[in-house]
Image (spheres, rainbow, N blue to C red):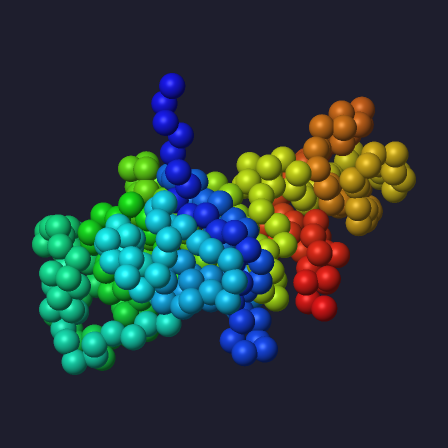
Length: 305
């Protein structure tokens, strides 16, 4: 019998207060090895606080966290060597040139191939000859991404990694995440951009006002998700023709065109529509943001109180 893998990240009741201000409260979460996990929520929800606790930069008020099977803390140096970390707020040595800064980080970590640093820089279209202080916000983000990736870590912890990146570089970032996943790397991705997680993640967790309100698999979200449907009929449709089907909302009829929203399976809808002569039909999935704030509307409201 094969030995079961330990989770890459496991928290139990993890809590952090700054005086009376809540950072994160009662966070219990498991991220499996090799999983790409999206940690989502609006700014100020507690995402960065959680990451600081996972990295051992802050001491929890209560609860505990294991990262790569070990307790985290200021002395967990060997564990942190196996992590590629990108903070949400960058603080880099501005007077150093980008290549010198990355070389310095590489010496601290050890086992970094110089050629791989240049390969990553080329993929991100990053000029390593410039001083960090002379780089734009987006190019500073690129330096931080190279630093997180260059030692080929077992776990990537990334806080808002694509903020400030142009769309082409964002696509390169997605490619790198996919490549890391194929190598078995675990990725913990904090973001307020739900569409980013939709393309990259196996599962997502949503935090609101310091509390975890939902954890779902992306595949499950698609199965239970929301679809916007537009149907053009050969003749004007009857507005109430779909009323007996559960999950149909916002039905609108304009001439021979009917528009509506389907929550859940679309199978019954298609079977009913097939009884009529249809000229054209389009069906578009709603965004994850629409799903979460529809599916968990009451939970979100309660978390905000």
